[in-house]
Structures are given as C-alpha cells and as structure tokens.
Image 1 (cartoon, rainbow, N blue to C red):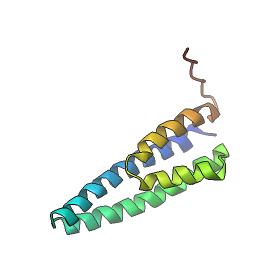
Image 2: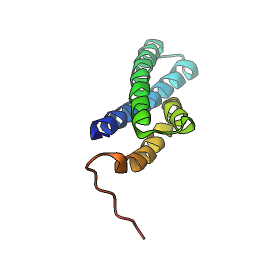
Image 3: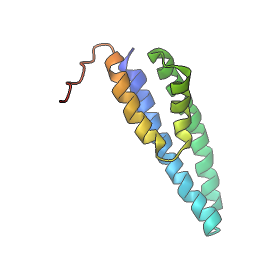
Image 4: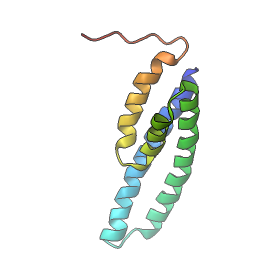
Length: 110
C-alpha cells in the first residue's frame, strides 16, 4: 500500500473533525443564542461535502488495508461524532503504518 493513501485519509480525518467541531459551535450559537443562521448553513454544507470526501478516502484505505466490516464502519462513522475522528485517526495510523511499503516498523517500547 502506498503512503499517499494513508496521508489522504489523515488529512481528511483532521479536516472533517475540525469542521464538525466548528459546526457544533455554530449550532450552539444558532439554537442557543438565535444568531448565525447563515454561517451555520454554510458550515453544515461544507462539512457535508468534506465528509463525503472523507468517506471515499477512508473506504479506500480500509479496502486496501483489508479491514473487517465492523472496523470500517467505525472509521466511517467517526466523522460524525465530535472528537472521535481525532482518536480513531491516531489508532488507524498506528495500525496501518506497518502495511505501507517501505515503512520501517516502530521500535517496541518496553
């Protein structure tokens, strides 16, 4: 597997996670303070498009890493849970890095 597959996933995981946090903040302002409806709409549309791109890249990585369906589903859904994508991305990178051709395995910590 090429490292570009993992890099694309990582970039989109962070972008999707940050956009989801921005969207949650906008929702608080929209429904809690009744302001920022236009900004909330724009952010929600942007997050939706970016999430679809994230799904494509995550599915691509999962199919190349031959993940079981449950793991793939969890990774795909992590873009909809605030803060989850940050943690899932770290775990995915740690598990997928050894599969990349030419990657050196990380030393085992005692």
